[in-house]
Image (cartoon, rainbow, N blue to C red; front, side):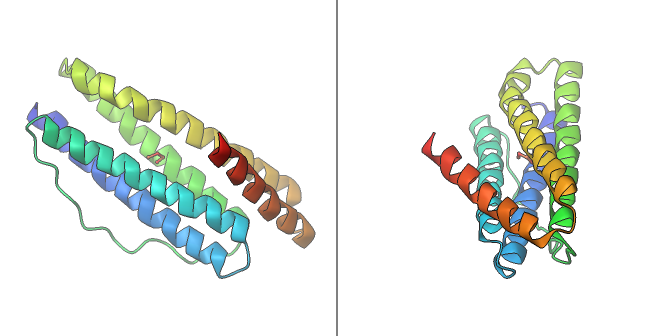
Length: 167
Ligand code: OFO
C-alpha cells in the first residue's frame, strides 16, 4: 500500500471513530430528555459510523498495511436544543465528506485506483447522510421553539427509522 494513502486511510479511521462516539453522545443526550425517536436515530448512526471505521481497518490490513486504532477525545454533550444537536450532525458529516474528498484527490494524485474505487462507497454514504441531516435540520427550522412540534418531530423520526430498517 502506498504509505501516503495508508496514512490518510488511518486518519479516516479516526474521523469515522470520532463520528461514532459523537453520535453515541448525541443519542444519550436525546435519550435522557425523552426524545426516544431522536435517540434511536443517533444510536443507529453511531453503529453505522462504527461499521465505516471497521471496514477501513479491514481494508488496510487486507492490503498489507497496518491499521492503527486511534484514541478518541470525549465527544461533545452540551447541546442546548434539538436544533443544535442536528446542526452538529450536519457539521460532522460535512467535515467527514471533506476528508473523504481529500483521500479521493490524493488517490488520483498517486494513481491509486484500487483505493479510489474502494472510497466510492464512502462518497455515496456521505451524500446520503448529508441529505438526511439537511432535511431534518430544515424541518427543525420550520418547527422553531414549538414544543408540540418537537414531540411530532421525535415521533416522525422514529417512524422513519422503523421504515428504513424494514427496507
Ligand atoms: Fe461515515 O458516514 Fe458519515 O460520517
